[in-house]
Image 1 (cartoon, rainbow, N blue to C red):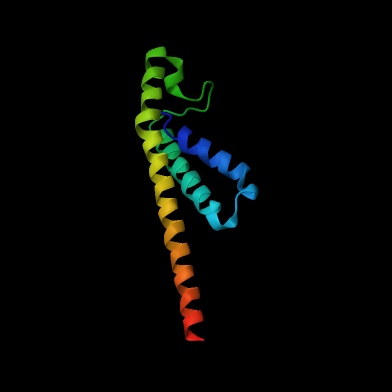
Image 2 (image 1 turned 60 degrees about the vertical axis):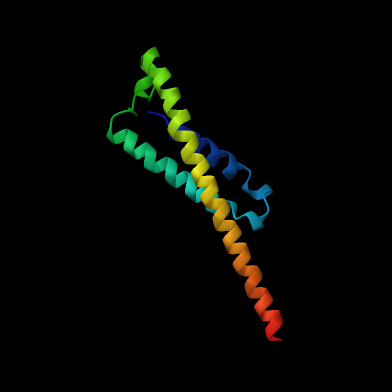
Length: 111
């Protein structure tokens, strides 16, 4: 219902502060992952008419019992998906930085 809000929030924060984060962290990779994940989920929710073009935009908000289910979905789907995206990004950064360090070491050893 609204699980895309969690990765969207992270994407918004990292996009706003990307200039303040060192380039070694490749924050644009995280932005791409989180915006892409959020967009995919939003499209799926639009297709299932859980996001509508009239206020309050989320069909679950119009009914209090559905709102509780929406919050549970955000906790059970949105948070784990966002954590998985962050974990994938961290692995990408570590592997990339390790490969760069190995390449530099190989160049030094070749001299």
